[in-house]
Image (cartoon, rainbow, N blue to C red):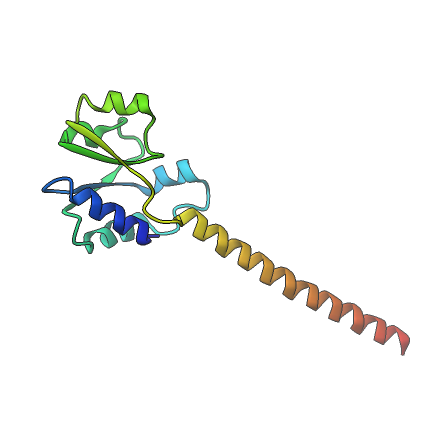
Length: 149
């Protein structure tokens, strides 16, 4: 689910160079990394959505079974843009063999897709629980009224 942080992040990434390639994990890779209920948006839709952003020049689907950092090794970018959570300092040092510079950007939003999904799940559970409690109380009342007759 693309949110404002993604747009800001991609705009900053684009400002570092002339051409912006965006690697997108395929559905299987997201599923392995984030769990059985992910991804929420299928890979084809995620790919297409990114093509509508003016900062993005090329979108590449990354296969779950591709060798680690295959796209980076293939493109050998002048600038590799990452978030604070993407790579460890040791990995950044290793990546510099294929990139002139690794730029680490801080978070661009106070929310995340995972946080939005949690909020939706919590809201659903609360609404379901309230509705269920009300229905159970009503059913118990109906049974007791019937027994009194």
